[in-house]
Image (cartoon, rainbow, N blue to C red; front, side, top):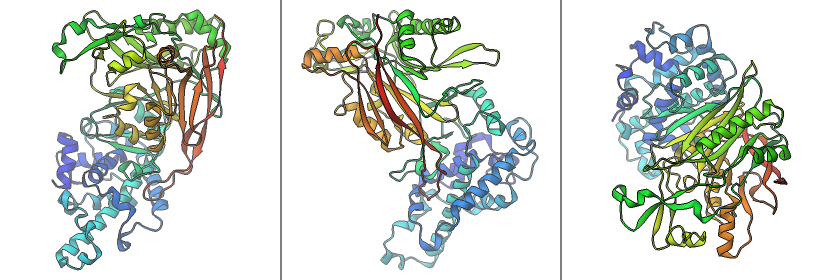
Amino acid sequence: MTFEDLCKNLTNNKITKISFHDSEFRRFCFWPPNVFALLGALLKNTGTYTYVACLPGNFSLRDDHEENALHLGEVWFNFFSEGSRWLDYMQRGKPWSRRQFAPKVLEKLVRSVFSKQNLKREITDIGRHWYCEESQVGSLTDVQKKEDENNWHFLTEVFTLFAICDYACMGIETYNDGVFAAVNYMHLQEDSKNFSYSDILRHKAVVLAKQRTPQVGIGLNSLSHYLAFIESEVNIGLYQSYNNQKQIQNISDIKMLLLPWPLTIDRSNFSPSILSENKSSSCVGGFAFFDYQNRLGVTIHELIKVLNDAGEIDILVFPEATLEKNEYLRLLEELILAEKQGTVATPNFVICGIYSSEPNNWAENQVCLSTKSTFIDGQVEWEHIWQSKHHRWCLDPSQVRAYGIQAALSSDFRWWEGIKVGKRELKVINIDNLFSITPLICEDLARQDPVSEVLRALGPNLVVALLLDGPQLQSRWSSRYASILADDPGCSVLSLTAMGMIERSNKTSGYTSRTIALWKDSENGYIEIDLPADTKGIIMSVECKYNEEFTLDGRSDGCSAVNLIYKEHFAVISDN
């Protein structure tokens, strides 16, 4: 496969010819995320992204590589923002009549990277002789040495242009004003559930905004600050909370209310699924399916009471499968009504585990991330973002006994959660153009494939894992997987479980743990969060801190990476 074949494979019939004589290819190269996508595919398919860390001396990047890339990135941004250029680009049905597709100072480099000679390069030949020992280099023929020189010259141009594309899209996720705001709006109108800034085929790869740059390891994600190139089966949904004012009022004291409800869980919450009677869809024998339902629910009166006792809250978090879907939606509408009546201050964000079921069909286990939008006319509405669980929970005989539910589910064999499992989706919400949150549900934290690569590429600032599990101790499984994301790409991670499941675990184990949540960030490490007896929830305060991060080629982000850091937590004491 040649570089040209790779480009054609990503663009398919959108571009008839990979050549600057073709007007559609010039239009394509006008938009930096498109060029970034082709270069990202090249670097990933050849594995040559690793070479930037150890280029030969005579082919090293410029001494002013960072300053040059930043300057040209700004020039490119100003170029495509000027006048009606970007509008012409967005009007796909209109022929592209412009000869110039990039600022003159940059056009030569782009034309060189996508020259006929470079497009004909075989993917397998790029950097072929890099692994030769020093003693073997002398045995290369003159032709091979010339090939090698051309390859290294080509790669240094690729690394330079890749960095320029990255800088040109600094702040691309913004929704405030300007070209990026308009581009985001138009792209989201097309498809917010499978979003991409590039025009390459979305089932091949996507280009998205990222929040963190990995500071450990060597990967393609380490080469950019602002854009991520992702090849994945996962549909990635990007969302922005729309509001006429800031959603988070004090970034030095973001308050999260953790409600580990239900506080008690009866064994009758677990029951054999009717689907166990018809295992035609099962893979092997020796197991059955179970259903779970929180039979206690949550009333508007107890929620208002806790919210009033907690004071102003930014983000409200419930564990996995806390509420039935219709009950949850009704509860949020009642909260808005209560807020209008002045009886409660409603948080701007709610993250809740949701379950729903249909007779004779698979149940659903989802997380709903609800954002409260206040419009200029004062109208308040909830926007609901749904994400289904990716992996079924398997209760083996030892777990059935550990949670003391043998009377509901036999401990003679394994029980699989009777839920739908569809195409993988990952939702990311951007808050105030400041930080992003991605939710996961229980097993999805542990069994991260295929979403792990997406998480590492996007680098969300906060991953919230909703669990139906035992105590969240540093010694247990959730801490191990939180640590992976905290190291690469640098996320802060919160896991929250229901107090009722901890109580069931305590009864059979003899322990008295009340650790309902575990927090992990880069500064404090692990924080175990206990729920004191006779309390309803925990208020946890975190703050946004800015860190400086560097790409693999040594470029700084100017100390713009946001880190969510734990400050303190205390209990909410609320009488019934």
